[in-house]
Image 1: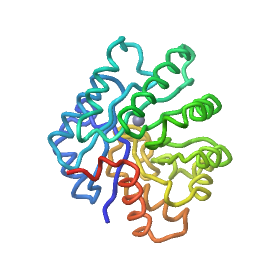
Image 2: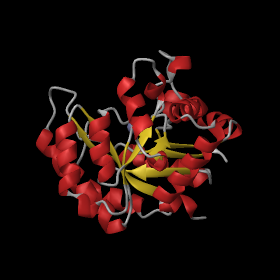
Image 3: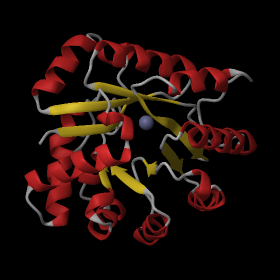
Length: 260
Ligand SMILES: [Zn+2]
């Protein structure tokens, strides 16, 4: 079984030679990656990459901190991208109250309308949530009937108690490089407590490098083996078992990963 990165951002600005990077990733055993859009241009770029490489998949959507250039009508274009046979989810969407100039109302509007979109297209969603645990919880509760096709929290960073509530509502969780840090007690407790078949691996490349390359930029999907091994150690199972479980979970969760 191979490794999978369910959430990364592969772009020319940070990586230079994307072709060479992708060759390296595939040779390292990371045999599928999902490159994630955060606005319209990035979603378009992700689509182009997925059209070039049969093992690269993508998502399309508007990230909550990337709404400055958002224009009415853009969601129709996101919708068209989502209909692509290799677009496996709507994302990344969600809420982020980290920055003081946050337009919470606009974030919420876009989060809800993109959940609506995912529901109408029968796609799962990749949710980004930072510094807004309660509002995310409420949003998921309010929209639960529209999240029947799957919802995944990327780079999960809240408490194990909150993880349990999301888990009871049927959500999935992906963890990246930060879960390998000694100080990441919350992520590690959540990994230990959550059912094995709700866990996924991601890098959020070019951000969030794991322990072994801490402080470097850019991070790449080559970090997936380290993240997987760390997860296996926390679950106290063989790395190979963890790896095949994650591969299976990802293919159950993202139905379009199975399409040829
Ligand atoms: Zn991301």
